[in-house]
Image (cartoon, rainbow, N blue to C red; front, side, top):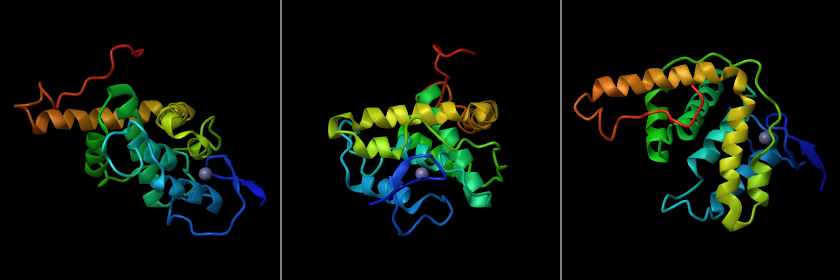
Length: 187
Ligand SMILES: [Zn+2]
């Protein structure tokens, strides 16, 4: 079977025909690798079913391939979720809530968007079961880093939303809803 470079993430993937996502445009071989991970084990990921949030976020953020409204939103919000995970240690469940709550707005096309990444879905598929979750973590970091030009904007969206959380839940803001940026990161 031949191989082709995915025009979204730059991964070398099987050159096949097949379905693709409605707006997260990718080479069919890339989309089929991502779909194959639905049936794959992520040892250490706990009881949550399906793909880890970091994988979902990174895959969407690696395919800023389409200026259509839904894709602009998808790229922006999944980058926000990556930032929330990597810089605020926000748990997966809360990252999903965050994405849902921020999805009512319009988001610009973040240009230029990266078209190659040092870790892709291809590496996640190739990983051994017991190493796969670690590769997902590397995938998250590689994706976030490749978007460095836009990190200031993404952090600003996230911070605005976290401030709203404090305002909506003042009674509990100081306890479990309070979210702080990791203190070991540069300011
Ligand atoms: Zn791809």
